Image (cartoon, rainbow, N blue to C red; front, side):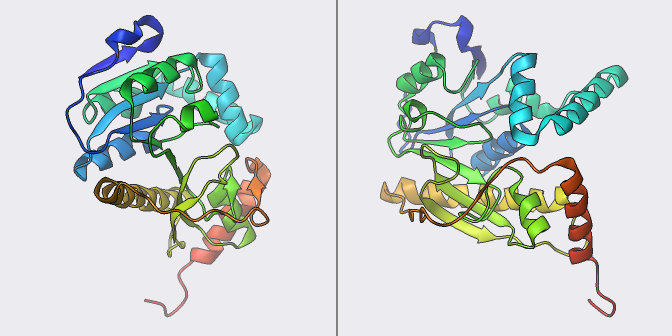
Length: 275
């Protein structure tokens, strides 16, 4: 098992020999806890991941990516937290290391951008049947259409109602339904055909951290079920989303997050006399 920086490697040295697996699965992602859990969950479920393609950007690129996802204020807070960890010499999160993914995939390939020529070259060599997004920004059609059956995205929200960012937060803030959706990727934000979706309501005592973790758990199970079906049938049915329905959200501002936390606490507070 090896970790290869594609930026410094010849494309001919990236591709491994095909091993006759009926379904070639590739994971496209930034280094993140969700991606690490995805790869581990697939391995534990008997699904072999052909390769993990990691996008690693420089400091400025990472800051811009986080800013697009959560806004400037939250970016500042996350940066301050990271600096604090460095000053405290806190241990590095395991999911930041390529070795974390190499436990479950024979190849871990590092690219500067998932939409780059590097990534296209890697996908061309691997010829995957299906790609799964761990966590990533918008992919261009040249990338998400390369796998034979397309690219799947795990969305932590109920589509088409809560597209975009901060889906769990917006659903709680608005009193909507929280849950998980697995869908094919298309040109727009979370508008591709839906493979499956499942409600994950808050439980008594839930925090946003525990609720989001259960939503990710649900997403992971949905991916495994979909891949097993695709492996058996070589077809994965999906329902197109209506163009007139749904809404796309931006990152929730910090002041609204405080309100959302209060509303989640009120909604999950144990009732007197309850079990």
